[in-house]
Image: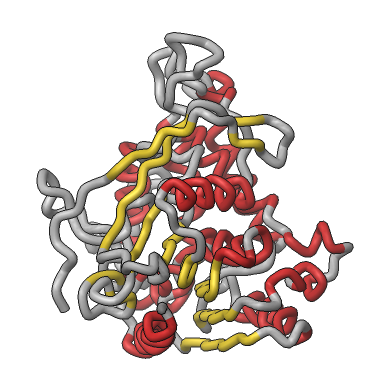
Length: 378
C-alpha cells in the first residue's frame, strides 16, 4: 500500500481563551495539525485522530526535509490502508500542553514576556483537549465528524468526544484504552513523575530559565513507561537473558543484559526530543480521566449522552496496562444504554504497543469498520 507521501504541518492561532476544567484558562494559544485526503463537498467524511502520550499531529506521511520521519500511525493511515485517505479526510491535532508545536510549557508565557511557561502552564485534561479540538473543527467548518479514532490516551479522547460533543461525531473507535486508570497505572505514572521532579536539573519546572534540562529524570520516566508498554512474551522473545558482551562482567553499574541496553537507548532518544513538563502534564491528564466519577461512579450513566453514537472497541490479549477487561467495562456500559457497539479482542503478543503495530486481524477489523464509516458519509 502506498504511503501518503510528503505532508505539511499547519497551525491555527486562537485569541479567545479556552476555559479549562481546573478553572484556569489558556489564552493566545496555537494548535498544530495535519490533514490527509480530501474533504468532500458535504464536509461529512472527516475523521479525527487523537494522539497518545508521546505522539503528535504527525500521524502519517513524511516531511520533505525529513523523509525518514514517518507519522506514528503511517501503517494505518493512507491510500488503500485501513483508514483510507482516498475515501476519508483525516485530521491529526497536537494537543495543548504538548511539545510538538502546539502551545505548551516551552512556549512563551503571555503573562511573563520573555519567559517560557515552564511549570506555570495550566493543568490540562482529556476533556480540555477535546474542547480545543472542537474549536479547531469549527474553524475548519466541520460541524460533524464521520468518526473519531484514538489508541491508549487517544482512545480516552475519542470516548470523551461522545460525552462532551455527542452530536458532532457519528462513530467512535477506541483502541487499547480504558474508562479510567487503575491504581497500578496511577502508581507507575507517579513514580515516573517523581523521577523527573527530583532531578537536580528540574528547578521546580523552570529549568529553561536555568539553562538546564532534567534529562536524567526524563530517561528514568521513559524506562518505567516503556516497560509497561511491552508484554513479558515480547521481552523474552526479543531479549531473553542475552548478555550484552556474551559473558558476565560482575558489575553492579555496567550494562550486563541486552534488555538493559535497549531501555537505556530508548530513554536516551526520548530525552532528546520530549519535554519534562509535558510528561508531567500528560500523565496527570491520564490520571484524571474518569467519566464515571461525575455520574456517581456509574459508567453506564456516564455514557447516556452517547446514545446516538456508534462504537468500535478493540483490545489486545497481552496488554496488561490497558487490559481487555477495561475495554469490556466500556462495552457493558454501552450495551446497558442500548448503544450500537462492536468489540474485537485481538490475541496478540505485543502488549500495549500492539495498537501501533502491523497485525492483519487488527487492521482487518479497522478496515471493515472504516469502510462502513466511509460508505455512510453523504
